[in-house]
Length: 192
Image (tube, rainbow, N blue to C red; front, side, top):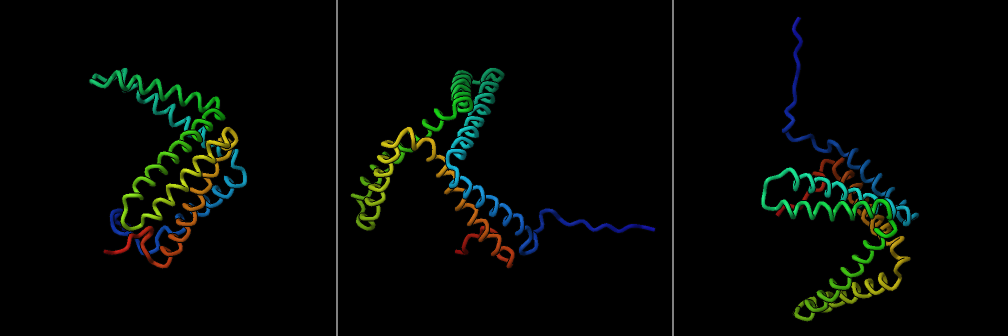
């Protein structure tokens, strides 16, 4: 007796709606994590600082290995970058409050510079000038608020930013999954 097996081509397009439940599960999880970040922004800030610290440590180790084991022109750079990344990562991992303070300070400075650039750019616009200048003013006001409330804002701001990202990502994935269930492509771009 011979057994007949059917193999599906892994590169063939999936049936419409296939995998929608995974996208939905991701969306629900992301939304839940975002809500939790809003409910406890200090814990979310702490977790984000530890994760970023771990990334710096990993980047430092890989860069040091590339610098010491490689035979290329950029060895000095790789070793220097690796040491700097490793030091920053260790500081963030073992002193997450200072790490959160540094991240928040960078966000405040970034908002201020961005706002100034938007005001300058908006002043040169012939159309949309008011909106661009308003955006610049809002970003400068946010920068002033963030910097004026340091160090307290450092304990919660990264957590709130994480929460916003997770909530919007979750809602986007949930809506995409529900459309995909009906046969639409997940995260499909409109046809031109």
